[in-house]
Length: 113
Image 1: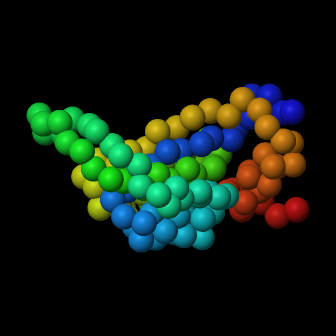
Image 2 (image 1 turned 90 degrees about the vertical axis):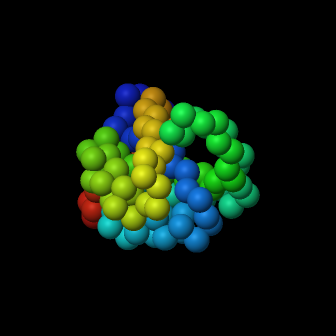
């Protein structure tokens, strides 16, 4: 198990499955993420927006990337996303399969083996 990796998990929600697929395809194509999982069953979100408590059905994207790609990934998601303030939460990855982490870095940073 590798420790203290540069791998990151990014959580993004969006309003439709088609929007989620569009975002996922764009960021993987541009090598800003190695992989994006789309939770194809809506999650229920309750949040405060413009002073009111709102409820919505959203789709969750789980993107795997590296620390180096975070700023570009955030810009690309903001460019494509329909929300005024898209969710973009970054989680550190403390460890994982060495082979998976190598693949993740290679695919999101354009490295060839």
